[in-house]
Structures are given as C-alpha cells and as structure tokens.
Length: 508
Ligand code: BES
Ligand code: ZN
Ligand code: ZN
Image (tube, rainbow, N blue to C red):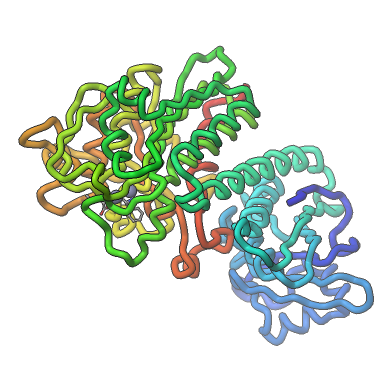
C-alpha cells in the first residue's frame, strides 16, 4: 500500500473516499463538533442533520458513508468514542474499520483528514502513525492461494490541512517509518500464513538465507547432520517423525558496534504441530500450521532491525521442526540430551516447543554470551485459557527487561501481561530420571511450568519469555472479537513489539 502525507485539506481532494473522525457527544454538548464543519458544508448539511437526529453518534466502530454528487468522492465518518478517551489503539481500530468496510467497494484511494483524529495527548504524529497502522494492517489479506478476490484500498494519504501544515516535516518522517514497519509486519504474515506442506523447516532456512542476502546479515543453517554433531538432541527428537528434517537457523545483525550490547531473540518454529505420538484431537489441528509463528516473527524482527538500523546487535535463532507421529518419531518415556548437556524426560510429545527451544536457548547463551535473551513461542494452550486470544503472557527474570517490553507493548497496542515464576513452578518440572521433564504430573499453571522449564536453559542470562499462543493468529471465529486490523490467519504478533523495544535501546 502506498502511504503519504499531503498539505491540502482532504475535503478538497479528488480521491475515492475521504475519512474523518467523529467524537461522541460529551456532557451537554449538542452541536456537531466544529472540526467537522468542512465535511458538513461539503454535504450541504446532511452530516449535522444526521447528528441532530441522533442517527450518527460517534461511537467506536460506527461508520457512515455519505455519497456526494457528481465526480466528488465519498465521505466516510468514523466514530472515535469520547474525545477524552482517545487512544492510539482507538485510532488503529477506526482506521482499520474504514479500510475493511471499503473492501470490494471500488475504493482505491483513501484520504484521512488528520485534524479530525487529533485530541488531547494524541498529537498529529501519534495519530498519523496509528492511522497508518490500522490502514496497512487492516487492508491485508492472505490471497496467495485465491484465484479471485475483492479490491482493497491501495493508496492512503494523511491530509494536514491549514491546522497542521506546520507539522509536515515531522509527519512525513514518522509516517514513512511507520509504513515501513507495517510493510514488514505484512512480509512476516505472508510467511507465517504458509501451510506446512510449503513452509517446511528447510523453506524457513531459505527465507532466512534470502533475508541475509538482501540485508547483508550473516545467516547460518544447521541441518540435521550439523545438529547431530552439536548434540542438539531436542530439535532432532522433535523433528524425527517428519520427512522434512529439522533446522536450527541463526541470523546476526551487527548493530552499530559501539555500544556492544547483544540481544538474542529465539523463536519456536514448529512448522506443524500434530502433537506427535501424543496426538492432538482433529478439531482445530489445522491451526497448528501457525505453531511456527515465533520463529517467523524472529525473521521479521531481524528484518526490521536491519531496515531501521537499530544500534543494538541482534542475534536471531529459529528452532524449526515438524512434529509428526511415525516410526521415527520420538515417544513418551524417551530421554534426550540437549546442546548444553542438560537432559529432558519426554512425557508428552505434544509439549515439543520447549524441547526445540532448549537447544536454541542453550546454544545462543553459550555461543554469543548475550546481554538479554527474549524468546517468542506459541507454547501453551494454558496461555490462551489464562489470557485470551489477544494477549501474550510474559515471564521474565529481569525487571528492567520486562518493563522495557511492557513499555513497547503500550506503544504498539500488542497486549502483554506479566506472569509470575516461582519455586513452585520450578519444582513441578523436576524429573525422576533426567534434569527436567517436559510435562508435569499435575495440570496446573501450564504457561508457567513451561516457562520454568525454559529458564533452566538460559540462567543466569537476563531473560524474557513471550508465550504468544493466543495472539499469534486469529480464526474466522476469534477475529470477530478482535480489532479490524487482525485478519483471519497469522498476525505477526511480536514483530512491532520487539522492533519498538529494540528501537528504545537506541538507533545507529
Ligand atoms: N503448540 C501447542 C500450544 C498451542 C495451543 C498453541 C493452542 C496455540 C494454540 C503446544 O505445543 C502444545 O501442544 N502444548 C501443550 C503442552 C502440554 C502437553 C503440556 C498444551 O498446551 O496443551
Ligand atoms: Zn504441541
Ligand atoms: Zn506446539
């Protein structure tokens, strides 16, 4: 999608649709807000008439499209809720509502009249960025396998008008960066949405190599032979049941080399999770093609770091395997030895994410001595039960790291909630025959016992674990309750979040 900033007032431009924001009535307020006088004039008073008879109220999600006569385009009035409650997230959603409603409605060009979306602490830059997020992310559809489709908005412009004309330079810069970030999210979604027959571990390695080539990043792919030499027994065990052999992939972004800090980002890359011998029920198994979302997010994060030239050195690790039952599959009762020598008793082959991550975490800690490790994984069903489809669970051994991630979350609108990790959880993952067990004896706090398991492979390095089982993808059912910028399929959750976090550490 083409995104730009224009000086002219949007109402005067010849585009298919001009969108303006409308706040809800507050207190004794009766007249249509002054900020919409231009729209009302262009509509010969039809807008104030609709407002006066309480047909249009400005509530969130409310969208009214007016048709002007002749060659003049449409005017879309989108509700923003009360002025005093305006947030960037409200604007993201409103903007996505507009582009979604225009899908298949012969609207190729869309202009936002920016002054109508600004209020209180939401200044032109924050509003502009949020509108771009909503429009670009909201217009996205995974159409690779569609032979026909509906037209989407293709060009979006933010119009400053008289009121905001002094902000042009700042806005151009902000909008350009935000559009780049969103394009990067769509790039990530395109890979995360690929089904498991296509997105095999080797295919993810190819994507990483291509990325490395484009941005001059060092990429290393460990195939099954290399993994055997390195004693990565975890990834090999999980990948053993599939004809598509496992891969561990590392990608290094050097940073500016001055500050010398290294952040490692490790992703769970299960290209399909059938559960293995501990097989899952058929219902919803298809969604387990999204079990690679953490690893694919790592690709997107490394790409963003390179695109935006963040100052910090970033090392990405993708732990990729397909979890299938077969005569070669690993089984409950097996004990595997991982990269750092620690052993795992397998009790449930469906708790495979932590098993592949054990090698990736152990490896990155030993090889790169990072200052912080952050992992992203669609790790547990318990996370979805605890926090829902929209929120990621955060477990961290480092308060500064956790707070940095929560601050980034507040800015990007990707919800994250911190959860505790205690000796109770650590006790639950102790094994009779190995160092740790991959599934506990009693079914409590599944998100946190999984975290306690991972912790044993990263200590003492400061670490944050993001369980993204809920927000990594939406389905036709769950998206009904989600913001309009979440489409059915992969969301690329974590890409904007971690990019923001890395940016907060400084840019080169
Ligand atoms: N990939 C699943 C977790 C998951 C569930 C992700 C639903 C997204 C939506 C993971 O590998 C898994 O199966 N975990 C088990 C662990 C259990 C066997 C200890 C779970 O959560 O049930
Ligand atoms: Zn599983
Ligand atoms: Zn899984």
